Image 1 (tube, rainbow, N blue to C red):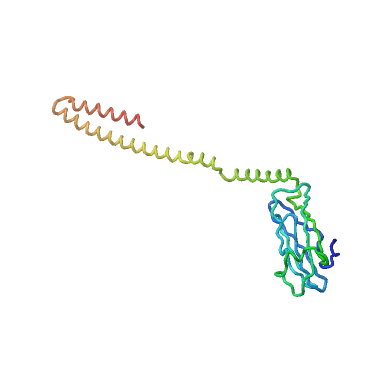
Image 2: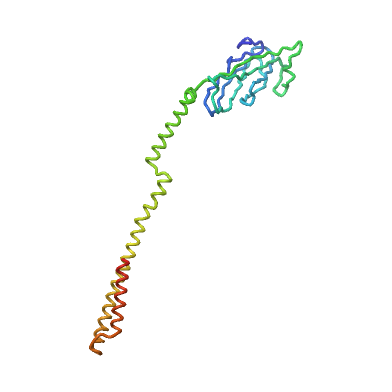
Length: 239
């Protein structure tokens, strides 16, 4: 039957149009209008029940009232060829007893038996491309890859990467380490000079004492001079 020709329910629209975007759910709705003077029960079926969620999928439409049915399509991982969908929906309607409720609906009500009218209204599914899904698949991948590369370029120019950061950290530490070594050597040199001056002073005292007692240099004096020379040579070589 076509839209508006059903005896029990007038169903709009005549097809279910889903805005299509990869990896995103999409919803559309249809209106079931009862223009009769009696209660009408309905049930919604689909050729691909795992792909869609229908709320409500069964119900009772009171005389002169309208029931809104929302159909939600699960997120798609890839676009179908030429954006053509083969899924279809079927709305079955049948006269119900007055004051009937949703709890009174059962599968037997929609069985086609002699003397019973079960009307059926078919709706096809149509995908409406959005801005992102309207592009060809290759173009979409190219457009998504280029901004990513640009973002990475901006990121590289403004933020240090893990590799460059790890290689830069030792560079920062080297000046600090060198300064510490230089400072340590300077202190050692200063201490050596002070020690040298002290030894020279003691040597001078010993020389004077030796000159007074023996009139010349003693073996102790020569040993101290030799030791002093070794110490000073070692310190100067180290610095």
